[in-house]
Length: 166
Image (cartoon, rainbow, N blue to C red; front, side):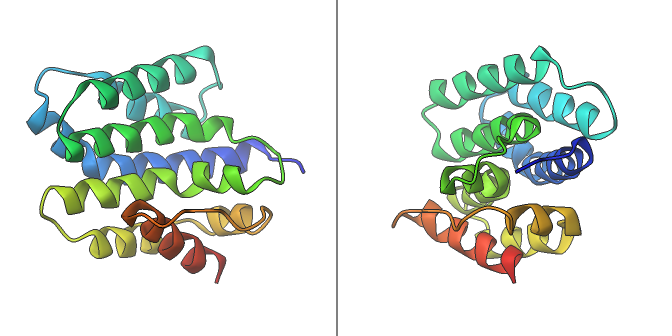
């Protein structure tokens, strides 16, 4: 399977848009930590035409570390959405169900962050679906069905994947 830079840019831009919606949850709970914001900014730069460089991986790993360092579940999910946004640029062209998590993960984590903060995860899912460019659905359909698990996060994954595949 081949993935074009245009497809990766479309996915990464959408992922950054989804993650940015949860970013205020992180920043209000972990003030002064720029790592998730930096991951989203790097994702936006790539989506806008910048080269895919080591910076994307570096900021993704830093945001993942931020997610693990907070004890606040909403903040952690918001940081994980940022990780997914920066990592979307490196979606692997493997026909593997695991890759589906990389496609829906930023929107899924943003919805979970919203819910954990007392908001409406279903509204976040609807927003993500309404704002997904056609390239995201086209890309997702080339992968086998994901394996989301039985948790609440898995349910959010199922909602996103099934709607994007429809």
